Length: 341
Image (tube, rainbow, N blue to C red):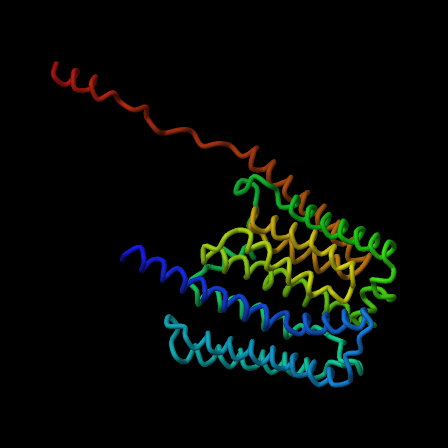
């Protein structure tokens, strides 16, 4: 194959990777980006109009149905699975699609069409879609970094609790920056709090939104996007720019406070690229978003993981070492001389 053929093949792989990444972002974050844009327009004084209610419903339904159909198509292309197994898996995928679509239709929308709600079936459908997309691209799930024990002592120089602590510090720092921007520029932020702005009015809604946000923002927008771009040999600045941009656009309803998400996005991307551990990021994000009780629980989880790592490291250091059984190498010249004698 000539250099020109390699270049053509590389451009084809790049286009394929970008199509996959854009489709994943559209299916996962499309409703959020649309609703966030509408709220940002209202913050600037524009009136989106009543017609946005129908458009919001169409965006929700369209993204969910597109994700489900894409999932079913990817399952059908599994060549290593026999026909009955593929059909059974497709039935499960169809059930997940139906559940996600049903919960989307049950979501209450305000008259301005900007209210969004996140349900667990949608998060499950999107995470399953990510898994099938990576398998279809011959990318192992280990490269996504979803295993919670991926950083056991002895396998990595950085203990797992460091990752938990750094992610928690990122979110706390971003919250401080958001509060500062709210006080410094009161006319460029919504009057209500963040939870009120997105319509959280009961504990169940809070839990479902925290789970949905953590999985979609970290597994899909961060983990899957970076993994696909790295597999396509794209430059590192693209790995950072795309996830951070989507994260900021999804928080435009916060006004100028959304710029604080640059810190969170860049920090999470850096930690993920360096350490390849996604589970701590997802867990801390979900707990932190649930409020003061979740923050306290995240601190407790970080401490518990630190104690676990300490116990494991001490066990590893105190374990008896097996005696060496290898013999020192024999000098070939000396061996020949002794054999000639």
